Length: 164
Image 1 (cartoon, rainbow, N blue to C red):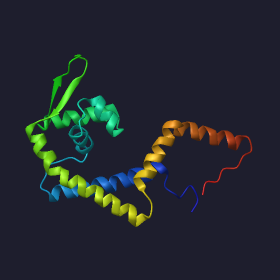
Image 2: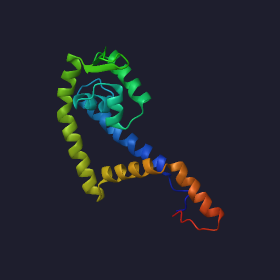
Image 3: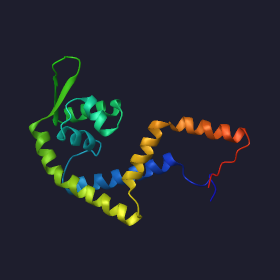
Image 4: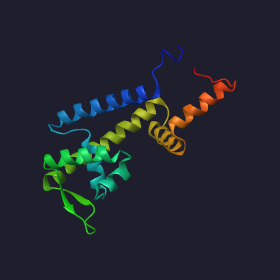
C-alpha cells in the first residue's frame, strides 16, 4: 500500500477520536444521561480544581474557543455558573448542585473508562496515551508545518524520503 492509499495521520486521529466518542455516547445513553461527551474534559478539569477557562484550557490542551463554547453549553444546561473573580478580568466557573450531582455519577464511569483504555493499550501492545503525549510534545517543539517544510527541502536538495 503506497502513501496515496494509506490514511493520513489526521484522518486516523479523527477516526479513532470518533470511535472513542461514539462509544462514550453509547455508554452515556445506557446510563440514562442526557450528556454530551464534549462536557467531559471541562467537568473533569473543574472537578480537579480548575476555576477559569484559562485553567481548563491548560489542563485539557483544548483550544480556548472550544472550551468557551462548551462552557456556554454547560451553563445553558444548568451544570455550571459563572462569577467575577477578584481581578475582574476573568470569569470564574463553578459547578452548580446539578453539576456536582452529575460529576458524582460520572466519577465511577471515568474510572471505568480509564480501566478500559488500559485494556485497549494491553490489547494493542503499547501505551497509546503515552505515544500521543509524546507526539504532542514533539509537535510542540517543532510544528507539523515546519516538519513538512523540512522534508520538502530535503527532497529538493536530492535527499530521499521514505513514505512507506
